[in-house]
Image (tube, rainbow, N blue to C red; front, side, top):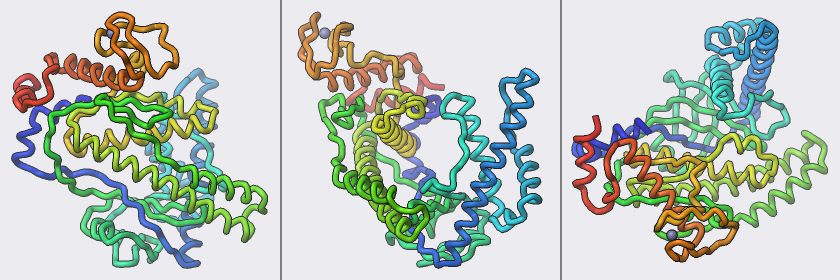
Length: 417
Ligand SMILES: [Zn+2]
């Protein structure tokens, strides 16, 4: 919040000097490794997984000793993990075959996982299984990752063929690459590049919106616009079909691996369609609105949820919110998340009456001011109002008249430090 608000006072000033913002972006390309490259990638993946599991085990054992002495928390730091890694390397010499930054990345990820756990934003880090259809390792770019027309040169691994759109190719060649994650998913190989690139800033619209996320309808906007969920029944049917046939085959047999690849193709197709829809929706939102208000999702609920379809729903909401959030940062727009305890459905957005008796009804009439409400639109309007209130409180000013004048935005300059 702090960061976004500090940016806004100078919105118009920024625009006078620069039309671009520097951002980090992820770019996924498909890899076509030959047999020897496939072996090398598998070796690197196995080494990263072994390192993760051994370091996690080592940490747990140390923590157990600390617990006996009355400690409740054991902080992890880079230095300790680096020493542990060097000891592991003498024990398992094949770890030297890995690109060294990829193993250092493992303990960095482990430290992040533990920090998330200690901050209550994530579950306890788990051991990685060889049977997981998704495996990966990450390499830092020390000026040793090269992008050519059809070939990527990776440090220690060598050349691998890739395919992507001409637009992505150009972007990869022109941008600074921070790191690359090599992924194996359901038998297919991918490289995910984290690059630094410029995005063109957007014009300001001086418009705001509240968004309510729902089960039946994906998103409901405070202006009454409803965005339906994408229909992925066909993809889901095919995924179920191949999952069933996979369960009947012998693990790691030829037929098993063939079916696994087909399953992977359908999962990817479904995910890509959803991701594409989310990109379109989030682009539309940041282009149309300068202030976007949403509810805060309870991330812990995602991990604690036992019902699979509810879990998936939570994860996809989370992805959409994250996408809107980072795009707001890219384009200097304001993103406000309201408390998840705020009763957005039960308050009347016209008179403020709290309807404690409201159940699951889609439509209701306010007993106090007699306004007819669509449940979801009313919630979205309340989310927008609450977003305004939070923003005004933070800035100690009245933002109610936001809407059509540039004067309001410029006046922020004098009030914000
Ligand atoms: Zn009312």
